[in-house]
Length: 145
Image 1 (cartoon, helix red, strand yellow):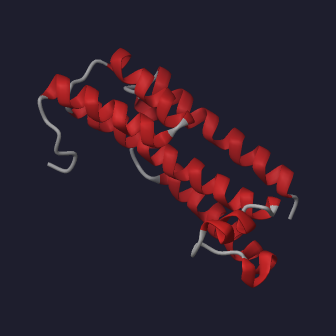
Image 2 (cartoon, rainbow, N blue to C red; image 1 turned 180 degrees about the vertical axis):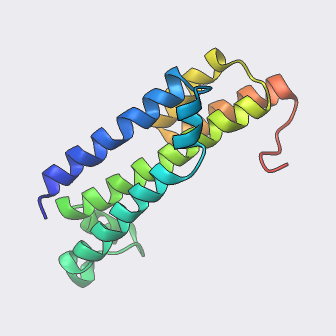
């Protein structure tokens, strides 16, 4: 498996969904493509494939039980790819959720765009930014109600 090629394909694959979330969130095709989990599922399938393909590459010293084991895990470019695809899938899922939730709460999209951009670049900070925006504008902080 060509790791660099898979990396490029994965990066390109998320550009369209993110562009739709940012520029055309209410367009019919955006809703058809993104308000279903199709893109995160496709990325998750890629993640699972890479995860299985590269699982044993680092040997027993890599893992998630200590900082050193995680550093060893990510010292292999193949496993960096696994981690990267993980980020792409989760970030896109979060961006889609932010967009759908903001539409349900009738939060003006122009105010949501910075949250989406930050979520694309640093997902946890994007979640925090959106939580603050949502709390201020909708007076609601319960994400699940």
